[in-house]
Image (tube, rainbow, N blue to C red; front, side):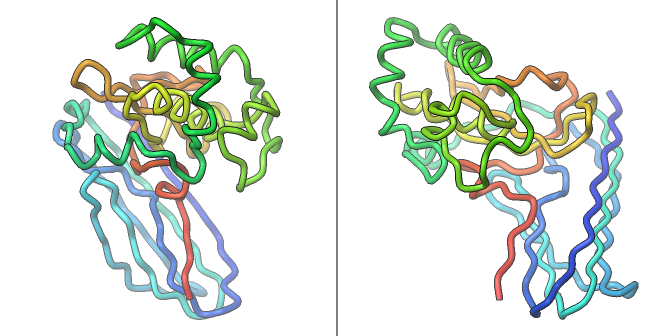
Length: 236
């Protein structure tokens, strides 16, 4: 399977800042990645330092003076990634409530809706329930909204769907986390977010929006929620 993906950003930097980019495809066993990342300031190249997290997430650190910064990423990827390994630390982190997936607050809802289910049946039920109870409305949620706000509003975008799936699963003692992906076949093409849960000894990805072909997804970043997987963060 061959997939071609790209990302483009134009940034106005008004104060000298460190930019942390998470736009590169995770290099996983089974994938052959041919890529190019270009970061420029007013037309001239900027130095880029690559940092790799234990989950395979590749961050690129750029020290940016003031001016216009352009980011261009292109990749052609062949193959299918091997199953993601299960690490004890990931299992622990994926059970804890987090900034955008407040599983402790959603425990009563999870228990009422999914009592008696476990394993793959539970994962499928949670994903289907979230897909049926939310309406996909671009621009309907704020960057600060978490799973609780999403459940009350009954609408959101891909990250809101994923946060709610993750929170409900964690509330039922199923390790779950968020994965930022490229999703060839998604219209319009954009960064996409899905949930990943540890079920029957393996990590399984589910997309409650059902908007993107599952087989085409390419992992970019893996974390507890959107706070760990943002495509751009800054620090001064």
